[in-house]
Image (cartoon, rainbow over all chains, first blue to last red; front, side, top):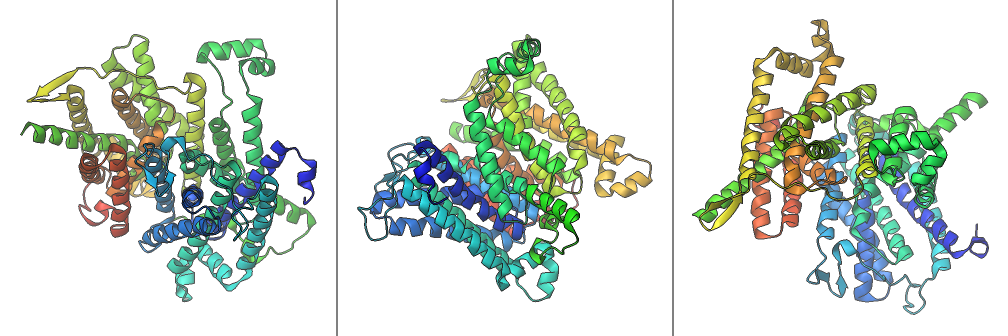
Amino acid sequence: MIGLPLLLELSALLDVTVYLILAILALSLALVWGYGGILCFGQSAFFGLGAYAYAIAMFNIGESTIPFVLAIALPAAFAALLGYFMFYGRISDVYLGVITLTVTLILFNAVNSTAGPEYHIGEARLGGFNGIPSIPPLNWPGFPDSALDLEDLFYVSIVLLLAVYFGLRGLLVSRFGRVMVAIRENEQRAGFLGYDARLYKLGTFTLGGALAGLAGCLFANWGAFVSPTIFGLGQSAQIIIWVIVGGRGTLIGPVVGCIAIQWLTAFLGSAQLSKASLEHVLGPTIAKALSSVFGIADFSNTNLVLGAVLLAFVLLVPKGVMPTLLDLARATVGRRRPPATELMPDKAEGTT
Amino acid sequence: MDLVLVLVIQVLFAMASLALISVGLAVIFGMMRVINLAHGEFLMLGGYSAIVANQHGVNLWIAMLVVAPIVVGAIGVLVERTLIRFLYGRMIDTMLATWGLSLFLIGLVTGIFGNTTVGISAPLGGMAIGNYRTSIYGLVVIAITVVLLVAIYLVLRHTRLGLFARGTMQNPNMAAALGLSPPRVYAVTFGVGAALSGLAGALIAPISGVFPTIGIAYIAKAFITVIGGGAAILSGTVTAAALFGAIQEVATYFTTPVFGVVITLAAAIVLIRLLPQGITGRFLKRWL
């Protein structure tokens, strides 16, 4: 893995780097939803805020240490504020989903409409639907002249992904992590035991926001570009799909789900199931019938595929790939008791 | 004076359109506790049904008021039978599944119609109020919304169908014990909710045009109206639509339309912090 940049071409290196960055984003929701039991449809809000905070601060400051910290702190603060409204309002799971989704859409609408030159923060023009291009890259702390190139970004992403993964593993066996899972399993019971569920949920949600912000910062570095679609519905959907495909209540599952789904979308984007290839796959008669019914028939768009994947997994494999595989392995190998933190991931949803 | 009248009409229209785009969602959510994240796409399909029917020579009013609700209602029943009925009692899975459905429908419609805006001009032209002009169609939409809400009230309150629906909503097991079939009531309710959404989408289409991702523009507003309204289907939708419609128009008047929506949604989140059960969770509790 360390020698990978030597083997890969530049485009492949770019692909692998973005998978690593998005895997951090997947881990942030794996924590919040899978272990915290908080269904957040708006994880992309924190991802986008991180990216925008980094970009805007970078144009104003020019040295990346403070922008990097801001890209983590600002989404965390926003998550804390939003979390306060939600958890201290005792809003139930389902409404949490709707509200976080709404917040993402608010941010999308607001940022999308800032195209004019009058919308700027310091030196940085917000750019509206055009996005912010040519974002300066990260540099080593204290050395504004030594910017990270793509190879460096790859290494930084790998190190940060591993740090986040093992950091979360550590968190889950700590007291905080155990209380968090206890609240996911039964909030009322945890409350009777004297734990303030609202405070723990707020902590989990804030940490999730910080991690998503970190991913956003790296993402803005990766493409040197950020646009409002980062807040969009498609982006939020993808994060949920990574977790549900990989499996709630695991950390490795969402990472695997993220890489698999990203690869699938990239593959479909490049394959272009055009009319000609449709004809090739289905045979000329069926293809002709299809296009006579529908006119133009180009069903290669990602929404269709993501929607179908989400539907299929909710209906057929609701636990996700990794837990299902683990169950199968346990059933064949023997009756090893699962570790406490992986008990009953189904209960993560709650039914109130 | 003329300006005040025009502003009043605008505020009324904002309230009516909020109530219109939310009522289908309110029926499905209020009666079945199903969070339908594909609601925006039902609206979108309503718009497309009306426009396609109109392009094939159907009278515009029939296309909007008859064809769109029937087509989308049928799609609703199909969705309930093939998808939703496997997921009752699993609220979050229902949410995820309807979200998948929403993405799927966006993709499907993009594949069929392409990713462009289909327009249809608003019928009836404009009307002068002093020095200002306002569209007659807007007034018609307000009138249709009022008629629709009254009709829903009458059906729920004064017909056997409404009685069955309310009974099943309150206690499905008891309704089943009395010989009703909750699955059938659910399927019909979902279909009716979808039909209302289709009608709303068709009525909005001449104002905003239709494109595959238009549902996204409505879904946040619709959900915030329904959740802000709380448990009671009609009074909740109407009071929340009135409140948020007024906020939206006033905010739009002082800023821009986009920030009007942003301010409305932010106000809604504050409202939910103050009244987690929605407006009808605290006031008008005994209303329908």
